[in-house]
Length: 240
Image (cartoon, rainbow, N blue to C red; front, top):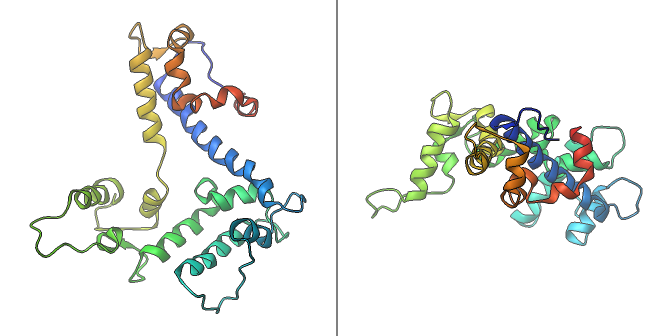
């Protein structure tokens, strides 16, 4: 919960917005849990997941060759389902289901997220993702004088945002920063924007009075998840 003892500073507001991002991603998965839990036992089985998603059970052993690329992706889903399971029960409880739906939000799924990304992008199997692998199937048009704008943007992101050690390739940790974008930058920008727009006395923080005076702007911002937090008592109790 945001407290107003000395006003809200940028870092505090940014932290609140980041918590809002994570909270609503996990809450959405929890709300969908009952759709998958067909028998209402508080667990989602692989069979229940398949029926909800595909109206049939897709099962196969490790050596089964599936019919097409879409079906082959089911194999990866099953691996993720099994990795999300942390206990001796073969089905997923609600927290495990959240980790299955959003592995980027569960610390114990980090290795799986990295491995999944390597399997998709590391074409030469060296454990890294090169610039060429990062760009995927792109090949420059031989008649073009230069790369299109979107390729220039992607190359810049590779060099300046992800390849921290400047070795021309992404190691597993650098790969993680690409696959799982950090919401910190987005939250910081939103916090700065709100304070810039609402800070009437220019003291670089927001008072309760300033928020009340600009409540429409505040209520329609990511700080309150566009107003949804105000109706979510569970979120407030978590933050107390």
